Amino acid sequence: MSFFDKIKKFLEEDKKTEKEIQAESISFEQLPRKIEALTKEISAKNQGLRKQIDERISAFEQDAEGRIDSLKQVDLSKRKEYDKIKVAVKQNLELYIFYLDKLAKDLKKLEDGDLGKHIDKIFSILNDFNKASYAPFEKATFLIGKEMAAARNAVMTFAQDMNRIVSNNKTFFEEAKLINKVADFLKEAVQAETLSKDAGTKIADFGEEIKSLKEEHENTKKEIDNIRSTNDYKKDSEEKEDYIRKQNLLEKELQLIRQKIELKSLAKVFHHDRKKSQLIKEYSNDFKKALKSDETLEIIKMAEGAQKIDISSLKEMQKKLAESSMPVTKTDKAILGLEDKLKSIESGIINKGAAINEEMRKQERLAKKKEKAIIELRELVKSIDIILQ
Image (cartoon, rainbow, N blue to C red; front, side, top):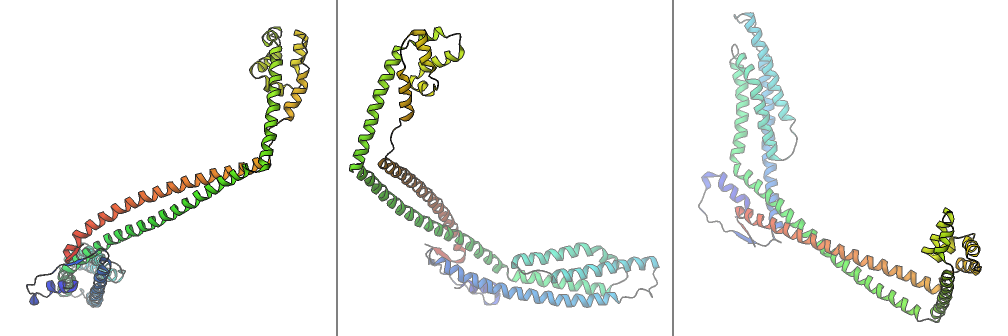
């Protein structure tokens, strides 16, 4: 039995029959097409009801126009009541005409939209009219009966017709709400499934990128090994070893001179001179560093003057220290560049791994969201005779 066959079963009382409804069992993948078909049926029915309502509003507008014209033609001048009463009745008549005219215009101005909300707005407008027009109507009927009653009957008939439309289609509105709710949960489940597939694609892409980065990492390490196996690298290594030997010799010479200078005694001699005391302290802490920064070689003057020792060789040593630095060869530069590349690749692998973990966590969240939506769907579709597998 189709969705609208079921609706007809409720609407056409004289055609009711006792039939056992066979529930349809479908998969989640089949559900979107089924709901789409039911949604189209609802849309078609909505359009028919909307047309019916619009035509009834249009008819009411014309009826209200006639009632307003009739009310405007009411003549109280020949009535024998007191003028004060006639003035009050006239004022309330005009006020009722205003509200009746406003009712017709407000109904005409209603915008297209959700049918349920459209109907709610119609009843809201009718309620506002009833509240506002009640007192003017009561006061105007003191002298005006026939025309006021006709106007009120026009409004009541319109309201009754609207109630009848809603009452006759109550089952349809309930099922339409149900289908819309099913469509919302279905959209949520499908969206979660789609996003999960997207996350799976990203995970696969990131995995390929990591694989490519690891291959690049291995190739880069091989490049470094190849450089280290060349004659140029061996030659450069010998040059650096020679530099290190010279530095070790210079270091030993410095240590010998340091031992030769009695820095503690020298400090006592120049304790009154703050600048010289500070310099001696620097030599005590780091002889090599102090020698580099002692531009005037004050230490030679102090040692030779106070301790009568010859440490003039410090001049040459200071010069050597200023001129010497570990040579940076072409092979060193090449290896340093490749080592920086290795660090960049390793960082890329870590970042891609973190991205995979994030997408996997996203998949877990989406799986829970989809499962929750499907649980809701299984319960909802039972009401429209569908069993979701």
